[in-house]
Image (cartoon, rainbow, N blue to C red; front, side, top):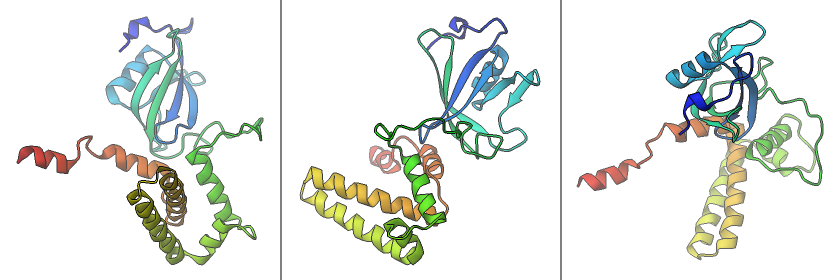
Length: 215
């Protein structure tokens, strides 16, 4: 744990804060905090920034409802910048986009990074704009029953591979299952954030384990 007094605020009394989605790891926004807004953020466990344009405190989501609940706050090695991981309610950007960083400047085809959020966006594109020959578009076209059938089949394949203690095959089948579950999520309008919030709301210790300790 670092003492707030060790943080280095600039000549205007501000420190940059990079806000990151705690579920997907996506960078959501870059904002600024002063000592007061940082103290409020820690006390209320939701982001509060200093608006440089309005010269006033800005509690994220106060008017939009897109509140950001803080998971943790980390300072960099020089203590002059912060990373804030959050669970968010709604989009981070005033434009309605999930992240303020949505204007692509350059993308390397060779070094393209994989992310679950990126895959979800790709699948959503296949749903919104069906492409001939696309298996994903085919699943969405066939509808919920077909998607559910595939989820069931892939779950069975995971069980078979796991029972055989075949690590490589189990990884392969889990990937197949994860893909089909994500298709199901999009079919039902469920986001990664929805699942992340549900997991975050659960107790760290499983209830069954608690019961076993009590007996």
